[in-house]
Image (cartoon, rainbow, N blue to C red; front, side, top):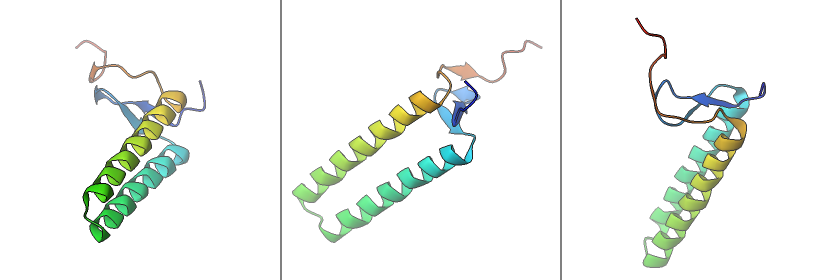
Length: 84
């Protein structure tokens, strides 16, 4: 696995982007979330809120899927595995 976009976090569970592709994907995710929030501000109704929640769910599922496919296998970590 040489072409990893995401590495395991040093503390906790999850991923951190390590290549420009990873950073670009996370940036696109954030732009889409902010755009969805701005769109929600223009129509603050029940339908708009439900649409925003659905959009965020799809975006987050896509982010986690890409992280899983293009990153290391996540696991819970407490720093380095080296013993002092």
